[in-house]
Length: 340
Image 1 (cartoon, rainbow, N blue to C red):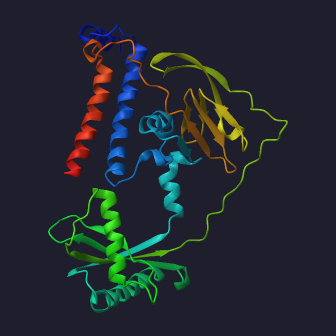
Image 2 (image 1 turned 180 degrees about the vertical axis):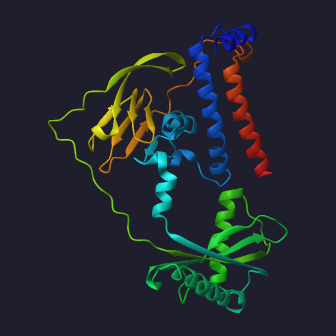
Image 3 (image 1 turned 30 degrees about the vertical axis):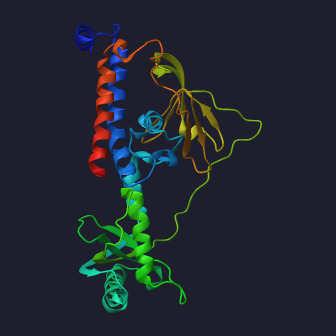
């Protein structure tokens, strides 16, 4: 690390850096690298990350969560108490799913549903249910949903649309499917084709064998007379706040020592059996009734301050900032390509 610091200082036009800033720079670049696919997966589907909650999994996910949420403009982070083994935990509780799909290649027009789609839905539903019941489910535990993959004639991108609820005196199913498709197409692509036929690419049925409801075990609640437990220790942790980096005294807690409704202001570290939760400065953690942690993130913090410079030309070249903005510009380019 010291050799790397010397190399960076020799090449950089900015002020000399130290080993802690370089180490923090690695983390910042890693956070930006992880944020980029999240932006792509959400914004390319027409969703703004700011309107959603960042859900955390993996042993290290909760260490990066505050920084990634801030970079995406997300103000709420949810950390499940089993986040370090969430895939295995989820697999053990997961429903059993059976899907079938058949190509159709017919235009979405009046009469096509009764003639070409309805019997396919029934046939695939029966096949799905038989497969799920063969592994021990009752028919009453199986739910099925019906979809059409639709696209405009002359395009190659289809959108999966769930069968809408129809009424006897309302529009036909074909009309309802078309309306749903056009709404979703506008969300994802920003426009619709006027007076262009819609093609049914394929018919899809998704059947789910529902397992019994998950039993949630509440933890003890904090009494009004209680405060936070004594920290296990005080650690010196290097953070960047408002563009300035320094060491902060950081409380270290064990999640099992915390009770429901306890609030912990950052900076803090919460140790868990399968993960480590980092509560950054300007953030706050709240333990819920079942031992999970919800974090509130101050999304305006942690930004570099370039107000002292009069023009772009006067900003010194910083290799860490250069790497971060390379990822951000590439993300913009990818979104432009998707839109085109």
